Length: 427
Ligand SMILES: Nc1nc2c(ncn2[C@@H]2O[C@H](COP(=O)(O)OP(=O)(O)OP(=O)(O)O)[C@@H](O)[C@H]2O)c(=O)[nH]1
Ligand SMILES: [Mg+2]
Image (tube, rainbow, N blue to C red; front, side, top):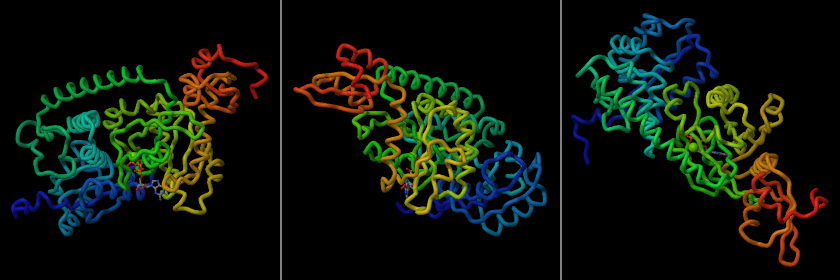
């Protein structure tokens, strides 16, 4: 359909001007790294980046974040570049946002809003959409300016999109009502999921976590032979899923893909996505994926640690997976061992390089949980279960029966007791 001239503005990408800086807040990334990341985020949200500035300042201005003089300079640049959106790489208070919009005469949004916007555009499942809508409403609530017309954000663009039908044009009371409805619906979904889980075979679970775009989904696809959507954009995965994977030993495990982490992930989002992230808390082992092509690998590691602590998963057994080594041929994984990374393993999820070692580590980890048994079984469901759930160390075929030595869960070990053979067979 041809775009009518009067609508052209609505369909043209927004022209964003970025403001980064160091306002004395502790951050794992340098302000330069963070601004580069913001540029990617803004592009991923669908806007053009037409320019930006960086301000070094020790103290945030309560009313404007940046100083008065800097606001005037930004206003001049915005005019010259014909920007129609200014994006701050720092959470703005509702008052700061309002004051800045007044002074700059264009829409002003902050980093959390951009992240929320990308989530809003990408969430597909019912739960994902509800979570994003909840996070957006929680974020918007303190920013509602009174009643009626002033709330209208119909112009479109970053921060105005939502999965809900209401498009954020709602008053405070309706917002609060909506928030409690969403929370109730999400609770229902979580309850249903925990029922499903209770009914699901208790296979060991490995959760794949890490910074956004580090290759989590690509790794899951490789290990599980699946074809989930992986792409070179932040937050390609918003609707995490679990997949069964058969390891070379025959053992079957569950692999969980998760939403990517990023520096300064809005707290509203973490809260909203907590239910989805709970797989991380339940995991037997977590695979922390790192992108070795990212210059800020150590800063990102700090972001990941902080979020894992927040999710109560810092103490979990883990493997540090250094991914994309095909792009960095001289990558030195030993260096990271010295830096205190746990079980570092260098892989390429795309070419499969190093994945054998990773799988061996996973097997090793899951094996440690188990009880070592030696049993003689006829082929059948119980033997299949030993192959799928246990770590088989040896297997011998004798007169149509199979003698196995394997590490299995204590529960399976009990069911194998009637078929146990002498201890001397246990290595
Ligand atoms: N060269 C190379 N590219 C890779 C490798 N692993 C992943 N990629 C690419 O990196 C990009 C991101 O991969 P994803 O698997 O979507 O990353 P993710 O961690 O799931 O990202 P989000 O879901 O967005 O948080 C894609 O373009 C992948 O093709 C690798 O080992 N080597
Ligand atoms: Mg992904």
